[in-house]
Amino acid sequence: MFKPTRIPDDSLTRVTVIGAGNVGGTLAQRLAEKNLADVVLLDVVQGKSQGMALDLTQARAIEQHDRSIIGTDKYEDTANSDVVVITAGVPRKPGMTREDLLRINASIVADVVPKAIAHSPNAVLIVVSNPLDVMTYLAWQVSGLPSHRVVGMAGVLDASRFQAFIALELGISIADITAMVMGGHGDLMVPLPRYSTVSGVPITELMDTEAIARLVERTRNGGAEIVKLMQTGSAYFAPASAAYVMVESILLNRRRIIPVAAYLQGEYGLRDLFMGVPVQLGHQGVDAVVELNLAADELAALHNSAKSVQENIDQLRPMGFLK
Ligand SMILES: NC(=O)C1=CN([C@@H]2O[C@H](COP(=O)(O)OP(=O)(O)OC[C@H]3O[C@@H](n4cnc5c(N)ncnc54)[C@H](O)[C@@H]3O)[C@@H](O)[C@H]2O)C=CC1
Ligand SMILES: O=C([O-])CC(=O)C(=O)O
Image (cartoon, rainbow, N blue to C red; front, side, top):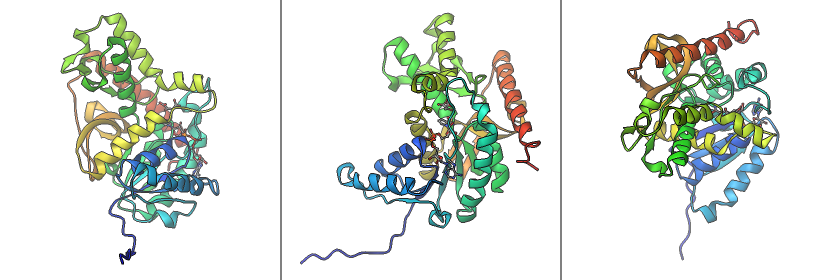
């Protein structure tokens, strides 16, 4: 008779998601159900990640995958992860900006990142918690990791929103649309119509300036529009999808060229901050920052956004989060 043989669990790819909330839970689901990686889900609330992991495990028969999903509140259980994603933090409520979360989320990020990286020193770190660019800078500082192994998730999400609004406006398939959004993940983000296309044709050749301005504005307010509608939290389906894309490009070494919050060392005339720029993203994290040829007004908008990010990074010092 056939006798199954149990062999020791030896994960080839393992992703830790810190924070088993809306974004973290949905990301864990995507990672496992798309069969990309085994997942360890950690939350400070006792039982939350364990319950979610059990629930996801009970869907395996239906979703047909054999990925392990572990829920825990112990960092030892996250050891040797290839990628660590930080979604721990507080989401904003209607009327708040992302920057209003700076102090509370800085205290969470400063606490969880060193603990996670102590057990996965070779991981690539992806930050999701808001305010995104500032939290990514802080995570880098407290992780001790080289800057290329720390990235923030926002540009893929913001570009995906811009793509969705272009598709809705033109009544065409999302499949043929690309978009680029640079800058900080805040009200001053920089959607780039010249670098947003339908089958290779820039949307500047397909829409009038009024329509483009309207879609740009809706993209900038994409997060706030959802916060206002939901009242009790912020977006998570599209954010989890965007984080998935980044994890996939890293684990499969796809070297996708996508916008992420990356450490800038003179690119675009900016230095010593994390902010949204296109990068080549692979196994080691950021292989290279891609420098697009920006027009003077586009570059000015990028610098304006960078100024706001820098002002918020500067607030971390008097608060005691940075040396
Ligand atoms: N970068 C982006 O584009 C996006 C960022 N976000 C941000 O992501 C964060 C999470 O959002 P949601 O998942 O919707 O919030 P949520 O409230 O559903 O989940 C957050 C989870 O973090 C956990 N947590 C808090 N402190 C912790 C700690 N010290 N250790 C471990 N876990 C801890 C909470 O218990 C909770 O389960 C927020 O800061 C939100 O603003 C959300 C969407 C998009
Ligand atoms: O709006 C928020 O606070 C969450 C977020 O960053 C987004 O959905 O873009």
